[in-house]
Length: 367
Image 1 (spheres, one colour):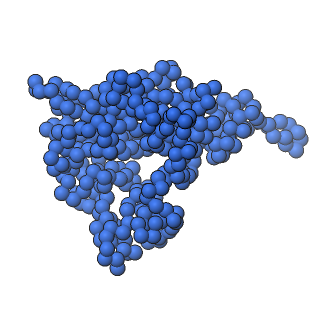
Image 2 (image 1 turned 60 degrees about the vertical axis):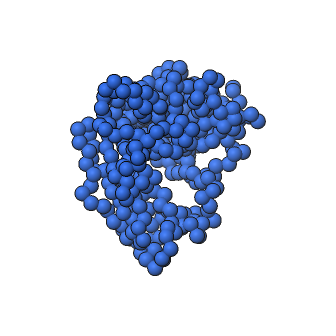
Image 3 (image 1 turned 90 degrees about the horizontal axis):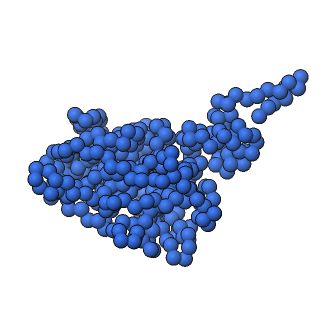
């Protein structure tokens, strides 16, 4: 692009300035500006640019409507994950032929609803999540699979992991196992796996390429937590947490760290996993207690459901009786209505418009 100065001498914007300028525009605007020049077209297709653009995107609130999820009259899909791309699984027909696994796909509704069908795994899939990390330029699928391993001459039912890189050089995507060192979980044993119930495992990921896989151990006496490095596709380690106070579903992120948060009267009690490596896991010495003054005079509980903790010192929650979503600023004590007339049954979710694409992505029309 050139700009005419007062003496009509053409000036050219440096690539870095164009790069940064375009990264703040909405997806549709970026798509239109591709035709400005060959350079702009090349820039907007670079994965580095797409990740930078995604970091600047503000999330949108959506409702999960079935009419928006149909491809044909015979295929229906249910939403699993929405962040830049949508990961969903088929409900009719639901399974691969001669396989216990559901059919999954990824689509980008911003790019004319382009989709890619995810190949089947050789192992039974319990759950699947997408890992989107623009800081480390990671765009992968993590599959939680049912496996049987022989340890100490005993055939044991275990949870294992496989990775599929959506930025693979080739378009023939395939699952790769993450190596779990022998005895990596010590004596921790998972509750009997139910191949039809994916909700028994919670998956939480950070913007640092770290994934936490959280599940109930045998007899539900404690919670088992696996920590994975999705940048290097490796297993970091394992830790546990007694279930005397927190439950698996209480897991949240607090300033990018795994935490467990529970509402107790007019307080939120947060326990944080401070640090981790392959040799040592360290929980905080005590709970972080956050006062919620707006709940002080309310005797009936729970009146709110905690949704998530943001990195900007805000709590987001659903006020059940008022059917609304609120944010609470921990520093200022300000309570703000984010969305009114909301019901949990409506299937609300956040989406981040993105430019993500990859080889093998086709339009839903098959063209």
